[in-house]
Length: 339
Image (cartoon, rainbow, N blue to C red):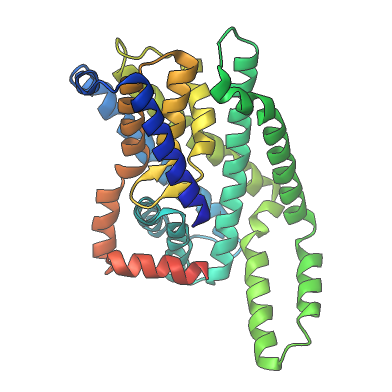
């Protein structure tokens, strides 16, 4: 909640400052829409929708220790509904997907929370590497960063390094210390009453089972492959969107990767129904690094948010209704699973 509030205040402050300082030209923003290359916009939908299928394939690898042949259809449906919940309810919606997968595949919910944690670890690794690439390219170029983004370049390298260290330590711990940690946790819970101890033992075992996929070299390589593929598809979506703005906003492929690097961290915080960091960071990078007019940057950021977050919502709502879920039940699942 505090993170969402901070992101909301940041968005309001930034937009207000830009409008006040530059005088927002609504006609220019509208003209950007009329000059879009719509073929490239439609192309952008293909890779971004492909990311959901890629995530389902990766989650199937997470499930292997518990279920050798999970249903890709079930995983895909849960993934689409889960990302719809994130867009509608913010980060609380993150827990809808592991809950639905657990129900559909008849595995413990705690094991799928562990799989969700694994997914976050691998996504953090990819985002850290991408941000590191962006910072390297900027620091080695003649781009005038300006005071607004100077703090990012000053501390960005340390952030990337810390994130990579955390990810590597987490993966190392999961691969080599899962069983000893499981035994110690179970031993530490023996003071509980018998009924509570059995419940705690079951939960701990399910959590360890949920991360066992990283102990297989083949599975780990497959997870890394799907992680790289996912970010390639995201880059293809960004590239298609950038091509749709050619003549209005001109970005090279490297520029697109730099934009992705910053936006990937800005998107960590999502305000329910609004988004948040994604739009603010995209506008900031385009205006401060590439000298794009705020009206054009705002148009780009709006479409970026729609394509990467909102486009899946109609599909997710239809699938949710087919599964017998509605707005209130999705929100309730997210809240109860988070607790």
